[in-house]
Image 1 (cartoon, helix red, strand yellow):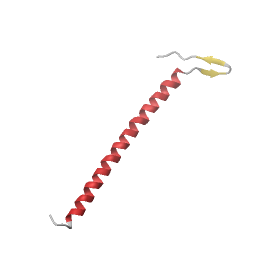
Image 2 (cartoon, rainbow, N blue to C red):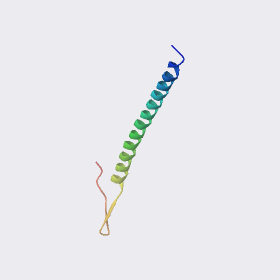
Image 3 (tube, one colour):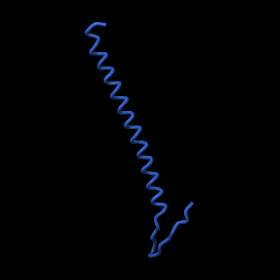
Image 4 (cartoon, rainbow, N blue to C red):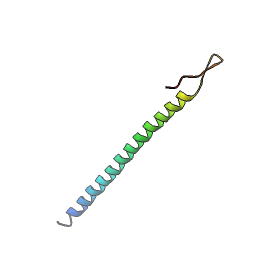
Length: 61
C-alpha cells in the first residue's frame, strides 16, 4: 500500500465510524421518544378528567 492510499483509507474508516455512532444515537433517541410517549399516555389515562365542574374518573383497563 502506498503512502498516498493511507489517508483515504483512514478517512473512510473515520466516516464509517461516525456514521455508525450517529445511527446508534438516532436509534436510542427513537426508543426514548417511544418510551416517553407511552409513559405520557399512561399518566394521562390515570388522571381524573374535569368537565363542567364535575370530576370524571375513567375506569382503568
